[in-house]
Image 1: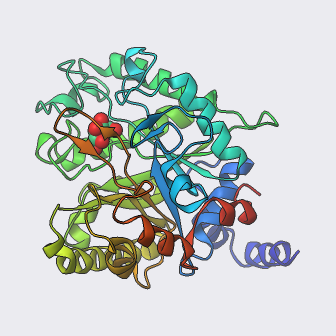
Image 2: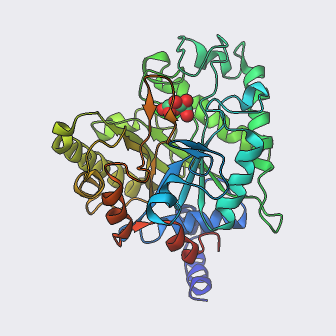
Image 3: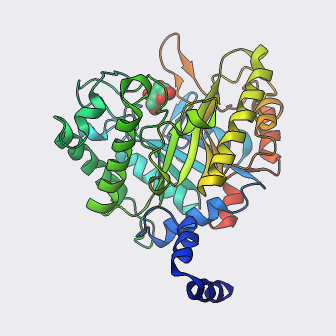
Length: 376
Ligand code: BMA
């Protein structure tokens, strides 16, 4: 009721001013579904009180197991599931039934529905192949971004790929037939040079054009209205660095960056100070742009420090107000010599500290966020 009265007064004073105020409180998609708008509002609320813990591929596999109903390394250690679930679309564009990390897309959809029904939040990345060379996302070939923009030789192919992504998003439905909201973070780590859409492999103007094209194609051509869009760099030093490739306020809902600690405990202090400073810049840009700040990916591979969660990660997060932080995937054994995980499993050296981290009032997991009802 209060809101109705305010709207009348503001509309009376100036309809232009009202537009300005209202837009700050809505996602960039003016046709976003009710649940998507509710998620946006709820992510914006209480930013300074707490943050949600997320994990990539949490329900699909962990260290030493794959596809066990109800299993999750986070759950094995804490007795609770994450609040945010990360999933990955790489190879959907090639019509393959499994993604680049061997997760079948039909199972992924079921996990997404499960997490949503528990009240959890879904975020999706896309390590799409290089459309110009046909190789992986990590095969930068200068000219690739230009080739997929309107007028480019791979533009039509890229649109075909986006059609598949649109169909995937539109296939995600909750129990009442409503679309499941997703935080989509296309072209993540776009200031690094390891992906074809990143850093030196294209100009800032080209990636901005590409980002805008993807948003307008999915939203305005394919009628996908269950997405919040995340602008997602890798680590950065200054506000200018962060915004160098920013497509503009009207194209982005969430501002994030990815950061990993190098495998060296001696560098704990350096990591705390870097993460603390970078989060400070992120928060101030988010305030200026009226967007939602988030740590879109983080991790310390193999977590070799027994008190990393409370003595390093939580210290760096400190007083910062971010909506969520997504730990990367527990791939487990990748080859005879490679082992990848970012969240402890039972018996892992940081498991007890992860339980302490779980009990910190500032960290939100599944049971906390179910109560928050973020889709209402
Ligand atoms: C990387 C690693 C890879 C994986 C890729 C995409 O950081 O985890 O093993 O294929 O992300 O999910």
